[in-house]
Length: 126
Image (cartoon, rainbow, N blue to C red):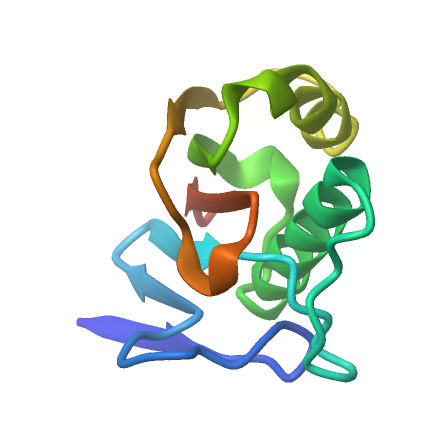
């Protein structure tokens, strides 16, 4: 059995997918980019502001699922340029306080809407 998670506090999907799915004890959050859900505009002033918007979108989806960043067990970060790693890591790390999730960071040739960073997460529900 699976349950679709959808909130207006995060960007609506731009394709045939859900913001997140709860399956058993797991919450699978689709890759998020820096779309401001209030106006549908991309936030790409700096890599830090872009990453902050991505993390805020993830936060909104987690809240809708009834959990928070402490429940994340795995993240995948996709970067257009690995040179942005340190700045992305700084913003990303500020959302966690302890017991950091497992993670991979991958440089890719391109991302949706030509963004610089996309992040997906897997979490557990208590």
